[in-house]
Length: 338
Image 1: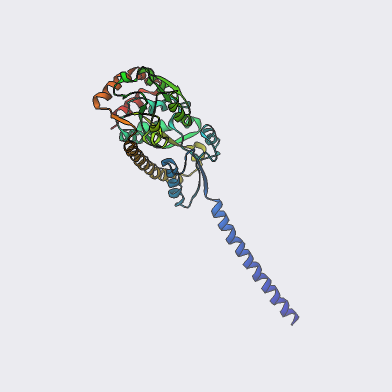
Image 2: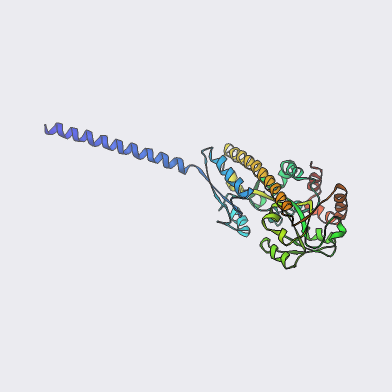
């Protein structure tokens, strides 16, 4: 009986060990499955409610459906600000950022293309350039810097406002002073019109317009609306003369670490998010234009085709100076885009 009891105890003990082992293996499989997902950090500097913020969340939603990725989005400079995010990407501390195109000019001067005045005929012309061979080529010029462009996320066309008088012809700009977000092309633009310019931070513009440090500025409908410039400006010229757009970038080492199938999942998710972003940006600008018109605070003037031709002629000195810097092939592709 003693021997039988021992056998029963041994059988029971072995059974328990098998159960524990099986449970342990099951937990390990779950843990390994979670650990095997590719971690992606997407850092940007604007609010989640903006087109860029919403598109970043759309990208997360689409990519995570594959079951192979875990995407964490950090909006509103939670991880890095404008100045730090590019270096963070190059160090692979984050895998995605979406900086303003003007932030890339220091790496590749050709990105000044978006600042060239009266270059794109319409928003759609800009989108077609971005999606075309030259736009894709321009994104890829950042590879030597350890960055790869994945998509263009438009913010919108720029328009002029000022507090002095209607701006209908190039001569109307003479003697006025405008705020710019950067020098270079934008300074030359106003110089060609006989106007002055002053570079200042976005957050300082309202006060500068209010105290007459500058007479006017250039921006998208949505920025003009949300920054309440109509309170301190009187005239608006619908000119669509330049652009404020973003480029979504990833780290090249991170990209190369993925399999071709994973890269395709990544690219497909970015395409869907990019289309979503453009729709949101277009809708937001259209809504802001209506808000500005309904406010009754601004006097509007929309440039005619003849007006635009006069401005294009006035801007020739800017093209003489920057075409070789940017690249004649890029300029011509953008100009011929429809």
